[in-house]
Image 1 (spheres, rainbow, N blue to C red):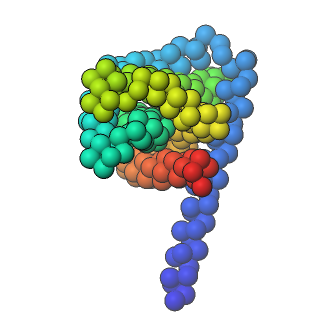
Image 2: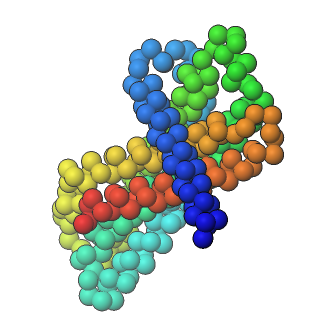
Length: 264
C-alpha cells in the first residue's frame, strides 16, 4: 500500500507540475501576443511561415475532406430524420452537431496530429541541443523569435481553417437540403435556423472554443518540448508522446466544457 501511495503521489506531482508549466507558458504567450512590440519583421516572418505550413498547405485537401464528410453527414442525418418524420429538425440538428461541435474539434485534431507533433519534436530537439541557450548568448530572445510566433501562427491557422470549413459545411447543407429538396423544407427555414442556432451565447462559446483549441495545439507541445532534458536525445520521442497525450486530453476537456456551457 505504501508503494502504491508513493507512486500515486509522485504521479500526481508530475501531473500538477506538467499542467502548471502549460498554463504558465499559455499566460506568457497570451500576454506576448497582445504586445505590439513583439511584431517585428523577424517575428512576422516566422508567423507567416507557420501559417503557411499549418494552414495554407493543407487547405485544399482538408477542405475537400470536410466537404465530403459534410455531404455524408448531412445525408445520414437528413435521411434518418425523414424516416422518423422529423425532417423539419434535420437542418438544425446538422448545424448544431456538425458546425458547432464536430468541425471545430475535427480541425483541432487534424492540426494537432500534423503540426502539434512536429512543433513538439522541433522544440524538444532544440532543447536537447542547447539551441535556446545559444540564441540567448548572441542576444536573441528565443521566446519572441522561435516560440511565440509558432503559438500565434498555429492559433490563427486553427481559426482560419475552422471558419473556412464551417462556411463550406453551411453551403453544402443548404445545397443538399434546399436546392436538391430531398425533404421539402420551406426556403425561409435556413435563415430561421441559422439565426436560432447562431445566437449570441453560441457564437461566444464557439469563438472561445476555437481560440482555446488553437492555443492548445501549440502551447502544450511547446511546453512539453521545453521540459526535455538537455543532451538526452532519446527523450525526444517520450516528450512527443507525452505532449500528444496531454493535447488530446485538453482538446476533449475543452469540447466537453463547451457542450456543458451551451446545453446544460
